[in-house]
Every structure is written in structure tokens, then in C-alpha cells.
Image 1 (cartoon, helix red, strand yellow):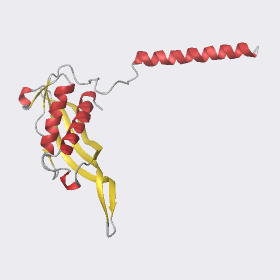
Image 2 (cartoon, helix red, strand yellow):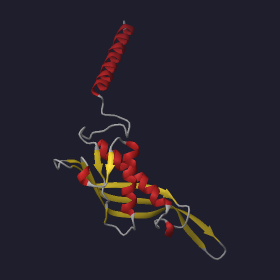
Image 3 (cartoon, one colour):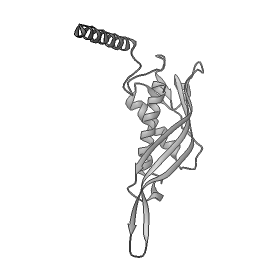
Image 4 (tube, rainbow, N blue to C red):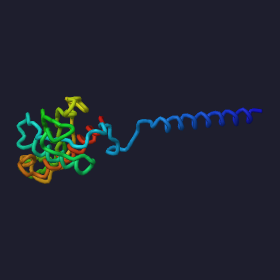
Length: 189
């Protein structure tokens, strides 16, 4: 008799599991692949991306971030991007509030007379304020006063050249930032 009860119990549990699974699928669960879900209104077709403000001492970081954000919108979405707010359905504004670079990994060199250490990887942390506003209504579609971007980068040269003008590290950082920003704006994360 006990095997009959176990069989009935296992069928009951399987039925319950299937029911829960079907309910989750029917509800959509809220899970999706990043970059493939858009929460912006269907009326938005053109987004203005004027130059970001730079409140840091990092030279030209706002130009790199703005250019990378425009490129990311064009590459990963169907939106047209313009620089002038009057020609757009929505306007994305941003301010770079702070930027910090910290050495993360070191390589030491020891000789008979001295030992030196050189950073081989840096941790970059940037804090921005970002707002996407519908131009006609003034409705805020996305706002994050504390959009924090953090990533680590290996150095191929010395630390002093990490953020020099035209340095590839700043370009990589801008691309990574723009990728996360466009996903956050369009998916409202």
C-alpha cells in the first residue's frame, strides 16, 4: 500500500511543479535577454543626445562618453539620434559627476638594490546623473541620479598615460559605459 501512496504523492508533486511552471511562462516571469527588451513608449523614434556635462577633472571624458552613447544607440536600437533637442521625441541628458581610478593589480620588479611595483590593472568607477525626457510632454521616462559605472582595465603602458587624450583605455571605458547606459535607458533598469 505504501508504494501506491508514494506514486500518488510523486504524481501530485509533478502536477504541482508543472502548474507552477506554466503559470510562470504565462505570466512572462519578467526575465529577458539584456538588450532585447524596450520599455520606452512607441511614440519615441528620435532621441537627442546633446554633449554630456563634465563635472570632473578628466579631460574630454564627456566627449568620449557622448560619442560612445550615440554610437551605441545607433548600433543596438532602431532609434534615430540627433544632437538638437528640438528635432527629437526624447532628450537624453547626462552629467559626469565623479571619476576615480585605483590601481588594482601590481607587477613587482626586484633588483639587488631596489624593488619597484607598477600597476598592471586599474579599477575605474564613474558616477553620472542621466535623464531621458519626452520632449513634448516633459515626462521623465528614465532618471538615475546615481548611475554608477565600474569596470577594471588592464594596462599596456604606464599608469600616467591611462587617461591621456586619445588613449585607447578611455575609448574602451566609454564603449563599456555606453553599452550599460543604453541598456538601462531602453529597458528602464
